[in-house]
Figure 1 (cartoon, helix red, strand yellow):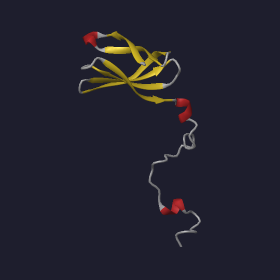
Figure 2 (cartoon, helix red, strand yellow):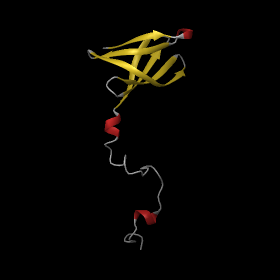
Figure 3 (cartoon, helix red, strand yellow):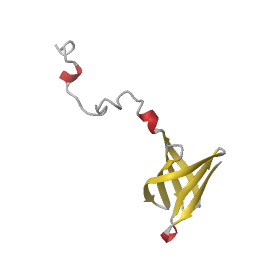
Figure 4 (cartoon, helix red, strand yellow):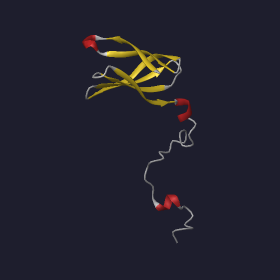
Length: 104
């Protein structure tokens, strides 16, 4: 079961305040970002468990949906997170084979 408690702001925008999933209650500490799609509002929130969640409110059906979860502590545990090297950057052959073992 997924349920959202919200407060209404100006223009009747529903902002999540608390969400409940599998009998666990998560208080929204911060709305990090929000954006709007056709008939839906999306909220990237930080909850009191320090994790990041993406929630969607469908205005047509008056339903909330949990779309995404991210644990910032686990991201820091990735092998490339503290190296300062972008794992998706383009590199030259020379950088891949600095001793020229494979290119010669």
